[in-house]
Length: 238
View 1: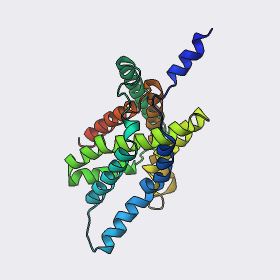
View 2 (view 1 turned 90 degrees about the horizontal axis):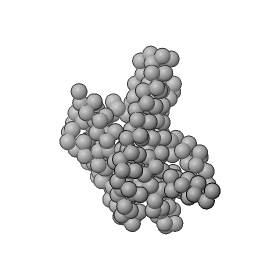
View 3 (view 1 turned 135 degrees about the vertical axis):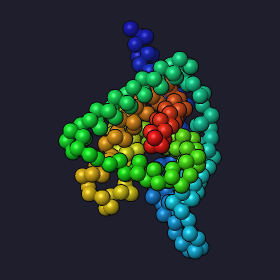
View 4 (view 1 turned 90 degrees about the vertical axis):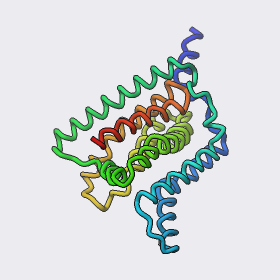
């Protein structure tokens, strides 16, 4: 009878958590990551009469974000890469990828059934940036973005809300992950089409949070995120 609570606790362990200072710093930084940093870079460029391409702005933006994450969350990121064990890590990745793929397929099939053709606007933006320099965007998509986004979304948001409510942690982190890839398109395209563009991000967010729980290390969702982005990058270049 005493074994069951122990097993449940182990299954839902997130491994090393954030310190109070890291959690506060992460929540305070989120507005900068979402809106203020990008706007600040563009404002500074205009002030200095610099003509920066979208690719250059993205390089500066992701470099600053990565530097912040590596400095502020360095102790958090030093947790064991494989968490509770190598095979549990691998199993989490495989099951998480299946969950992501099945969820994405189901949502896209439903969208095609209800709306016919639909556009994922963030993919269009990525296509334009890849056209400028595919190697830079490969590094950004497969290395920079997974480390930054998983630390902030799964580590900070999901990890700090989850002790109070696991369901709320999934909902809030999924909404944030979805909006951070789509908020900039509101007002530029029809509202319904943007909502359709948002939906495919929900299965990814759920799968990444579940993998974090299952493996008990932030490096599991970082790895899965990198694999998903690498696969998407390859498909976008076909």
